[in-house]
Length: 439
Image (cartoon, rainbow, N blue to C red; front, top):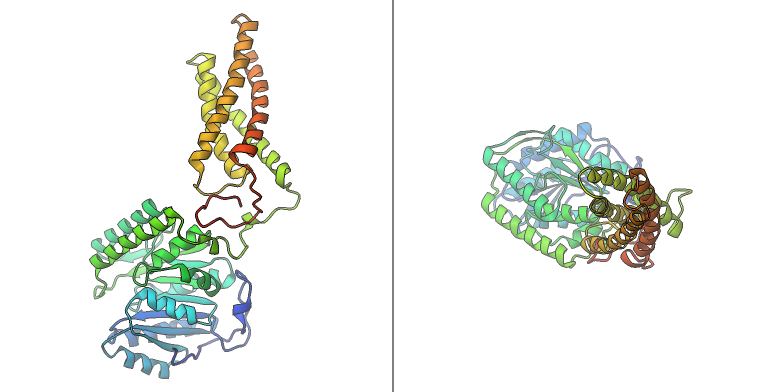
């Protein structure tokens, strides 16, 4: 598909495709570019020449590795192909790909899937983003620190010039993503992104959209799979002559949000292909000397139990100042039990995500009821033995002993009933329908 695969500037080593993920790309000699910057275009005969020459000059001057600029033509009907072909003949490291269908997502998937560069990027043809952000964008991918990188116009340190209408739409859209898809990245639609090729090979087949929602869908899937997304504050000057149809794009984006949200809710997305596919998350590695299995769970449970007991005593003392011992005990035990279940779920038994959280808390309440019966029975026995005149310090001592017994029982119930061991290995990936399995 490429009519020119020449590369520009400094040389680097060949064979990057065989490197393990998240390793720093070595510097050496070779013909393969380290970076392939895709510029999707549709009827851009007026701006394309100046854009590519400016981008090429910037990379030649500042980028320390070999690079390629690929013009991805989305079925232009003007003289864009002629301009692009002229550029490939005049500038080393410029390539041209022609697609007979429109769609930015389609162009990116096509070029990224065929590229031999280990780092893939794209930017809009209007170059609204200050090019000085390009090296900070791709550096974490070259170093192996991150899997994807995006430019953000909504960062506190970004400097953005655009009209209030576009500003409102951008912020509203990102609020929709946060509220509906629990997205944590700040700017989904900034036309300034990069991805490692090894990540793209796994991620792109799962992205369905071929238009403007392509970016958002790719980022949501990457984030849900636990991939690392690096954000770079950018300086941005909006192009007043942009041909993007805002209303149509917003409508298509909302349809995409609904589709992806429904797929995530029903578990139809095969996220098991993505969940930490490169095995380099430090949370998946055991530390020397840290006990595993039952021993590790006991250590974690004891730590959580000690903190929960402290929380319980503080709560009990606070509630006791305005209520009787039974009510104070019930309230303190209820609140501390919720915190204890949540902490043990994550820290002791290694359950991540929200799947099953409500059920686990409900089962924790049952365990709470058993603990309440033990502690309340102890208070009743103390009250009967002391004929209602037990000192506050004695109450606390009895409750500590009762809580220790309740703690042992809670651990057994947690391990056998609430969070039963299903034989999951550390670092095993989640099932497609369950993002809350053991890690």
